[in-house]
Each structure stands twice: as C-alpha cells, then as structure tokens.
Image (tube, rainbow, N blue to C red; front, top):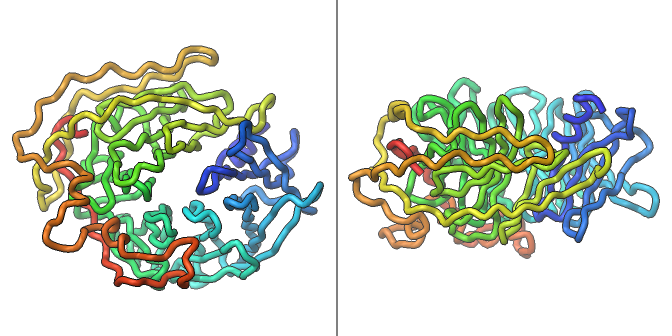
Length: 448
C-alpha cells in the first residue's frame, strides 16, 4: 500500500454520531480503485461491509455514516458535487441519489448529534460567501441551503444535542482578520454570534466540543504562541491553558471526549493524538489534572480517530493486513480531578506569554510488543494564587446571579427542538439568547 493510499483510508474515516457505524474509502490490494466501506462498531466484534458501485470513486470523495447504517457519499466533479446514500442490498449496493450542489469546494461537516441528518460547507459560485447545506435529513429530499455566510469558513463542531447550534471558524467577512470561532444558529437562518474572542488579535479555534458537559477544547495563540486550552460552554470561567497540554517537543490534538457527563466537564476524559519526533501515539487527560497519561497505540491505529463510551472505555479503530477492520478497547483510569486553582478575574488586555515553567515531556511510544509509554514524572506542586477563589465550574452554571443564564448552554435550555420533535426544525418556544464569548484566563504558572 502506498503512503498516499494509506492517507486516504485514514483521513476519510468517519464515525457516526452514536458510535454505531463508521465509514471510509478503501481499495483492493495493489490498486487504487476506491470504494466506500462501512464498519459496524456496536457489536461484539467490528466487521466491514464493502459498498462498491459500478464505477470506482475518486480519492477525494467524502463519506459519512448515518446512525441507521446508510452511508452518505459526496462525489466531486467540475463545478458541482453530487450526493447519494449507499446501503447494502443483498450482494449488491443500493444507491439513493439526493441531488447536487453547485460548488467547486464542498466539505462534509462532522455527523450531527441526531444521527439522521448530515450537513456540509460549500463555497458559493461567487467565491465570496460560504453556504451551510443540509445535504440529507435521511429522506430522499434534495440538499437544502440553510444559510449564506460572508467570507471563508472552516472547522465545525456541534454545541447542542439537537443539531441546531454549529461552531465554525472564520477570519471575518473580508478574510483579513484574526480567525475566530462563531456560533451559527441553523434554526434562525444562520444567525451568527461570537463564541471565542480570547484576546485582541488572537487566532482562536474550537477543536472539539461535548454537548453533554459543555467541555470545549480550543487552540489559540493568545498566550504568545499556539497552545491547547479548555473552557466550558455557558460557564463564567474563562479559557485556561494548562501546562499539561503544552509538553515540550510535541503537538497535541484532541480527538474524542467522553460523553454522558451532563454539566460535569471535570469528569470528561479526553483522548489526544500526540505527534512528536519519535512518532505518533495516544494520550488521555481530564480537566484539572496536571499531567497526561501516555498510551502505546495499537498496531495499525487509524491515527487521529477514537471514541469514548459513557462509562469510560476508549475504542480505537485500527487496520492491518491481517485484521483490516479492528477496534482496540482500552481502559485508562484517571485519578479524580485535583482541586482547581484559584484564578483572578480576567484582565481586559491580553497577557504576556507565560514565564518558562517545568513542563511534562511526553515519552516516545514503546516498540511494538513493548510496554506503553510511561507518563512523565509529576511536576512539583505549585503554590496557589492569592487571588479570591472563583468557585466550581458546574456550580457557576446553576447559581442564580440575578439574570438569565449566560453563555450558549444557558440559552439552549429554553429550546424545544430535537430530532424527534413534531415542531418544524428551527422553531422556538422561547426567544434565543446570544452566546457570551469566552475570554482568556490569566496564566499563572501551572494553571490546570
């Protein structure tokens, strides 16, 4: 298998919202004649079902599994993108064509939480706007454009279980400003509200969001260099940039958050991809902990992919010549979160870069068959700041502060639209409130 073929198989891999199915492009050994492949993940053992049609697919086709087992495919041709749903039909592949979108660049967004709808970003023919499209709602309806947004937009993370609030990244309408994350209300004709504005002139991107707990993983250069940080949707506390998420000589990318922890972000385990000079491996972490736990990756890991169960099992897809459809199951117990350190109120001006501090360096992964990488030694405890205690994150979401709940999490409480609702998509019983942008926490040494 060539490097380019392995890259296509890895990068096209997508897991359904509920973790029941996955899909990717694959090819017969020794060829690059591509076809979609569906993985079933919710049984005792995973298995793959090929979904070829009469003509091979292009390597840049997008695939996305729905929770009912059908696979959406987006086929790009000159000036347009055609969409279809594929499914097993006896020994053959059934295909339901949905229609086309006139664009020279379409990208499927992550699976919607409901599992039955799929969305995409498409550059409009004028080249100056981006369309947000509902490409399928599980029926045979043709794709529908829900919103037109000025400028270039990227990213994509769902902020609620209804699949209404979508976070996207943009450098602004004229593509000249810093990159910021914006919340797009798909039930209100694409109304936008700022979500991340960490410091003046900073590039802020939302990488991962968990609608259950409100945990957000972000990357920003507000601390003086690009760093990974975390915040809580709807919380009064600002984004924090812990030293644990900034080990020397490596780059961390969050790939999965433990679901099923309502309003308890401190209980959410986070799986991270670690890229270093000696390879790529896995690590796990939880907000409030001051070090990562490094894990040896299984053979054939589809790097950058993984999913958690609500009870804390990490499932990692892998593919080798002997086992082309595998799912490694890991238990990575993490200690309870340490007591949160006090943080003073955020300053109006962006802070200076943090002073050099002792950082936990990730160990390289063990050789095949060896022990998992050992976590770096625990750094010495750092004295707490003398500033007044801010309080528990989840408590701040429940206390009555004399006004309506702040942030997106509070504004979504009054919404009644869900995947099973009889109301039309986007209908509200209560008026929606705009989100309060997350700001930056001060950076005392060792902030958790």
